[in-house]
Length: 312
Image (cartoon, rainbow, N blue to C red; front, top):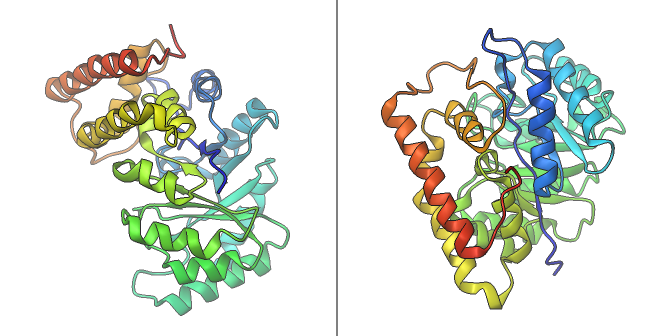
């Protein structure tokens, strides 16, 4: 089994305080991911507030990230936003024309929640037919609803030779292992897990890497885990990092993505905490205090595993 794993950040979109996309901030953020050692970039995803961006903004953001990556790492970006499959295929092609390495399909937008697996697969087949030559990936996004691809389904879809990336959010390590077992024979495909509770077990099972919101706080720590999860000499340090992710899970998800932007501010990144998302909760003194404590706790973890910050 190949032990080399990679971290694919689900990128934030920085905004100015007036709500406009902050492309200067996006440049700084992209360099933060790259300097941390990210193996790729997932632009225009849920963390990017993709549903709050206009079509033109989605294209502009993805183009900006592709230009900054300069081919050093692959870039993927969401291309399906509902409607008829033919309509979704048209936007997939527009996203692909930005220069991305693969276009991501949101599983919950490729079939209705009431549709069965056969309808989902038929819709995917139609999408693949209408986007000939475009490498495709999947994201089990929780919005508008979470549609989890079964291991057998994923195996069949990957066998088409068109699927190169899968961001998994099933939260079930047994499903993860089965998905890996049914797809590991395809060389150009990688499964990236979003659930950090079983991150080490996922990597040991053969996942290509991790793609998680925690990378919007400390991307270098996710890279460290991908690089060292299998080192027996660092067993205690790896266990410490795994437990840190488990213990801090709720703190990093509450009032997200505002809290992640605030954390990056504390690290020295010059971006606003502005978000276009609604219904995420209030960024009040209690939420702020929890992130302040997270910042302190991370400092302890860094010292314990001898990890340096990307930012001063």
